[in-house]
Length: 110
Image 1 (tube, one colour):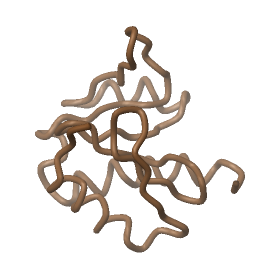
Image 2 (tube, helix red, strand yellow; image 1 turned 180 degrees about the vertical axis):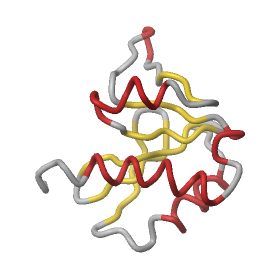
Image 3 (cartoon, helix red, strand yellow; image 1 turned 120 degrees about the vertical axis):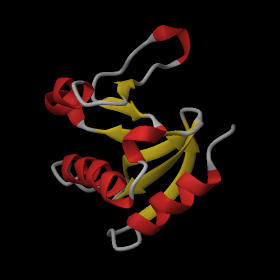
Image 4 (cartoon, helix red, strand yellow; image 1 turned 60 degrees about the horizontal axis):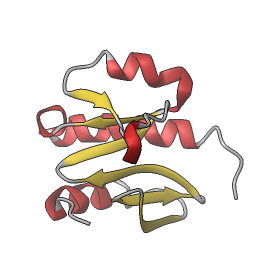
């Protein structure tokens, strides 16, 4: 599995204040789990963010955002990929990670 180590370090730093945080390799990515739920991840050079079904269309309307695509062409609603130009600043990265954290905060703790 190949993922951008520098982006992973930026995500790790941004999430350093999160609650129970752990990293897990899954779905072809390095995923960051908060309270047992996947919040975001790094796959290749893109940031994967869990925005939920209700936030999916709005997220896709943003620049540099595309649907996440699984093996076999399946596109799970609720997950998007943000390409490097969309997360080139720490502020932009923090905004996207914040969206993932906001969604995960609505889920029951595991």
